[in-house]
Length: 116
Length: 115
Image (tube, rainbow over all chains, first blue to last red; front, side):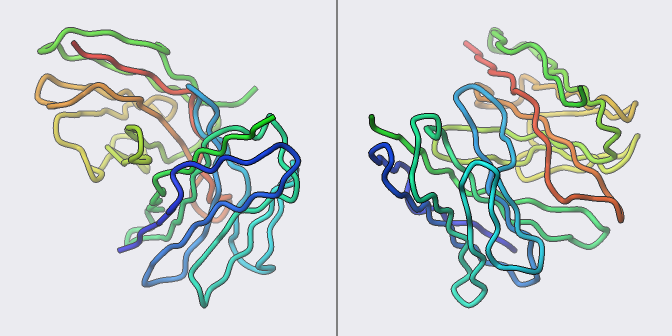
């Protein structure tokens, strides 16, 4: 069984300050890792993903996440946040169960509130 | 533009009534999913379908039913047996096989309120 833990339900941060949203996972098999972003009353959008290769992955809007296998973590960081980054962020882990089905487990989400 | 549409955006029903939520995709994806989102609980999988005419129960299927008669469509029915149906419902799809990008694409969601 796999699980995802996002310990911080809310993270307030001032505009232009750095931020880190924490994500830890557990799984008995190799996994793929994702960060999704959700703006109010909308669906989720993929922010970035780790499948293999370089452990540092980046998004087009300045976010990055680093896969740390020994610590089973995939924390999301941004060196300088903008008001428009205010949203809820979900970490997700997926593997392929028997039969080829891609089972995805989502964390409980972290609400990032950027303060002007 | 390719994507997933869900309708309606907001839905109100009286307790004891069945209600069907629509989900349509034009991404040519084989796999489709229904999630339920409640505050502070993340997303929980209700049903998923990997191919037309086949679907499987997720973690919280009780009180829900689905059909997959067409590749593009995966409607969800919330039945009167669902004890606490008020929630935000999200439909998603993904590619499968060797061409998969492994990510899921989400619709805009339907907010269901049952009173």
